Structures are given as C-alpha cells and as structure tokens.
Image 1 (cartoon, helix red, strand yellow):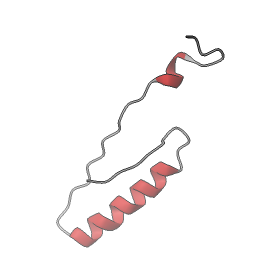
Image 2 (image 1 turned 30 degrees about the vertical axis):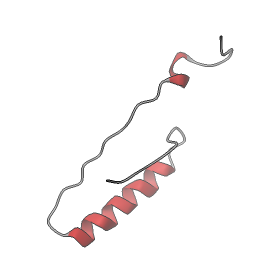
Image 3 (image 1 turned 60 degrees about the horizontal axis):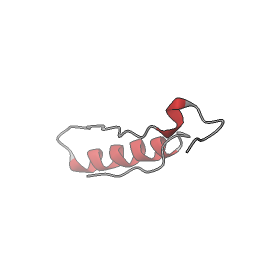
Length: 51
C-alpha cells in the first residue's frame, strides 16, 4: 500500500523524553505543566504525558 503525497518522514513516530530536575515539587509541577502546554502547540505532537 502506498500513501501518495506523503513524505518519507510523515509516518515516522518517535518519543521525546524531557527530564526536569530540582528540589521543589511545586516548582517542578508548574514547570512540567508549562512544558506540556508548549509541546501541545507544536504541530507534529499528538500526545503529551507526564510520569
């Protein structure tokens, strides 16, 4: 099956791992929310999850 008009990279899925470190849990939580919100504005990202 061929997907006409699609670029070779259009079907490649990969994860992006970001690690935020620090000593203040409240600050880390706020930063994680900020990063997640910014990533969701990127056109190619489909999901963002925290762990």
